[in-house]
Image 1 (cartoon, helix red, strand yellow):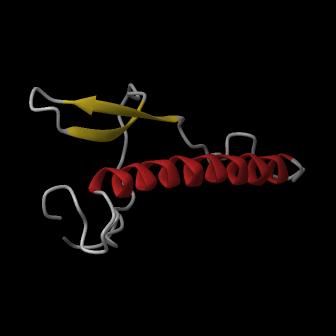
Image 2: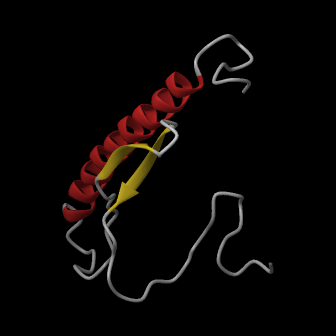
Length: 99
């Protein structure tokens, strides 16, 4: 990115905005799929009711401008309270695998 213009001639801000909008749309689709999955799980009579279900958090986009009038966008989710175990990462690591 040079002077706010990407290598393909688009504005850097437009590229970032497109990314965050797509991320939120995918998050919404994932939540819908999780609800459908959980509904099917709930139809299994022999399934222990304590079996974990899948869920996704709402996400929001904050558009920020700094003191130099440079714009940025950040994706935020509500903070979850409690203790959690990390099961996987975005780079392919999963729990049980040596680091």
